[in-house]
Length: 188
Image (cartoon, rainbow, N blue to C red; front, top):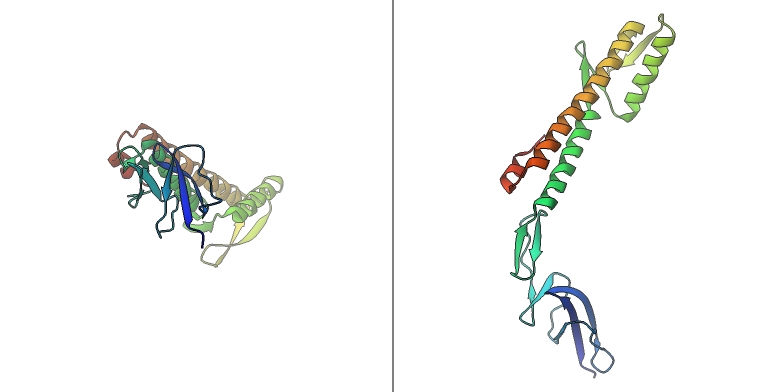
């Protein structure tokens, strides 16, 4: 039986390639490598320290990057800012495409509902005698005239603008953050 061997190429401790197979056919990579003959399945969750393979500890969060020189996870402000902004955009979209209220009536405003409202507003602008029976978010119906439809369109526009204004303010908070605590304090 041919002995199995695993060669782990690395650059400053970061595992860059894992080559395994029978010793008589497996050749080590040309870069720095560590020979491993143990029973453990080697993955990219390992790093090389003092010519030994070491399993990385779990990352505290996705905002941390592994420092191969010290063997610890370090907070990465740039990654954290990117993650925080991604979370704000999701929250903005949920609010923008949720509901809005005009004159005590709550309207759905997902993308299809927004198109329908815009279409009704256009009809109202072309014909000031138009009236539309509208299904509200609670599935009740209400009849709106042309003036009301235009006001509903304005309320939708104000709702969307408010969501984006709020998101821009949160983006500014994120951009000016210099610590993990400041990033973690930014929420929708």
